[in-house]
Amino acid sequence: MMVVQMRSYKGSKKMIKLNRNYRSHEALLQVPSKLFYDDDLIACGDEKVTHSLLGVSKRILRAESIVEEKEGPSRKEEEEEDKEEDKEEEEEEGFNSDAPLFFYGVIGKEICEDNSPSSYNPVEATVIVSLIEKLLSAKEFQVNSNDIGVIAPYRLQVQKIRLLLRSKNLHSVRVGTVDDYQGQEEKVILISTTLSNSERVNADHDNSIGFLHNSRRFNVAITRAKSFCLIVGNPWIMLAAPHWKELLLHCSMMRTYVGCENPLGSVGGDGEEEDENALLAMMREKMLGAGVVMTSANQKMDEFFRDEQQFRVLL
Image (cartoon, rainbow, N blue to C red; front, top):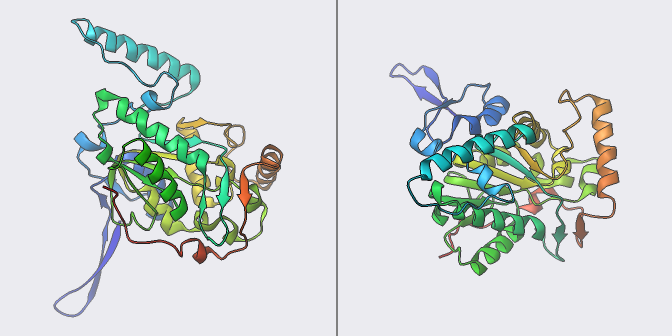
């Protein structure tokens, strides 16, 4: 949404709020609309596009996600039976497969190389590529590699994911930093939050978790998808940043959180101090001695983005 200032022929100023979004499924707009636009965003996108991937999550977020094509006159009946079985499984598992926004919890490994402000997370990179392969294998949804984009906060993570995709011959999947994706859009967006160092959360300054405290980058990242958005990251780290915690809470309430244990699974969303302390204590216990390899530290937030370049597409 934008606010445009216009000047009439008599010189007076008039403010016009642009609150119509022609890109995304309405469910993808709920969090940014609440946090940044006073719940005023209106989804006006083409539903043939925005609603085209509803249900794809059950094909990529479960072990049995890759479904082989069937032939014969009973194909339609079998599909209906599969849908009923999926529905029953979802009710048992608390899994909402018809949503377009998911958070995939991963306890990864954050690595910072010498003399570089960037970080990378090989665990998240591997998960991202695996999910893309499963998505492309879900033939009934007809997703092509050039429909998919990947966003990561750090250039080093972008490079690692690109290399993995190249090794799988998936050159047309676009990968860029948050700033690279300013003004861009894709049918499918996967976001690797990258950070997984528990010490960042224990620190008493915003710079400790870099981009997670940058509301503009958060807003850009979660509003690039038209049809489906999947965030891959460490949910315990998300607790330290208000906007990401709000997104994590939203996914928890909408039953679209999958993966490792959800830190908000048994704690209310009221943000009470005792709940916050309990969550931090749980995180320290669960992540002690794991989650990070740090060879550089104590850098200001701007330095985390110093190596960003213009948006590129590997061909």
